[in-house]
Length: 185
Image (cartoon, rainbow, N blue to C red):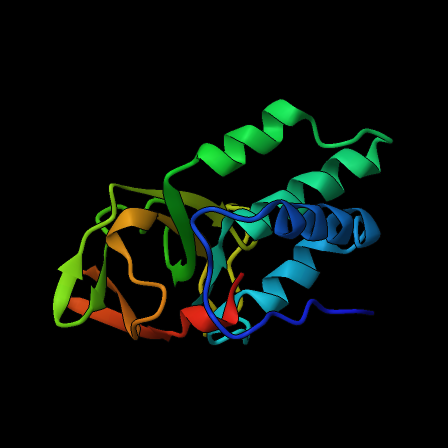
């Protein structure tokens, strides 16, 4: 399996045409495994089961994903779909968290720290899931539920060349993730 090799630098708020075409070709080529392939490349934090970690969803990531999904049905990414991704002013960062009940993820907040300043996302959303049927007990020691916290930061507020720490907070607790933007296109 080929993995994209990204040049030194960082994510780009505006992709060049050749970068768009590369992402679309990558998506078509990896259409059957695109989610796992991209998530491995765009991972931060811990990837172990029941450990907190996440993925960075840049424009390149989204173009590759949408091209793969379209390719699965024999379609191509449309100009409108490509424009919607390219015009999106937000860098999406997903963090997976675990808890004991279905609505545990309510109340999470997120901030990005760069150059000593806290940058708040414009939007934050949580999607909740259960690990097993609610009528069954979860295995001892394992959380019954999980959620994906989706934080949307304006590209214009982030410095892709600066060190970054994503902080997820809830009920006085926090998780910190060092993010090296130079790893993501």
